[in-house]
Image (cartoon, rainbow, N blue to C red; front, side):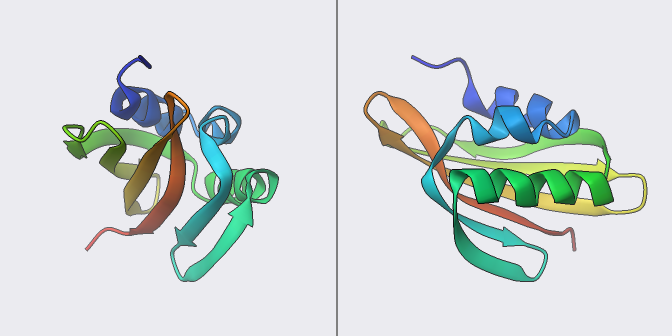
Length: 111
């Protein structure tokens, strides 16, 4: 079983580590970042996330909510702060051959 995915995600988001986050991407990922929404392959999604972190260097993350009681599905909601803005990050993961993979990643300004 993978370590607690929510904690790992929070750490990787705080470090702005798009490479580590992308390791858990499914082969195609639905990305919703601020007002851009599309489905991308793993490499494209990693690049878009990397660009987001370059524009919004993270300073702090915290886990708002995590859903982990379904054996085939995980949901993690993070609060991500950069120097200038706060974001709400929603990560949806599905189990694919014994590992949870990110199928949807949503980053939106915190209201």
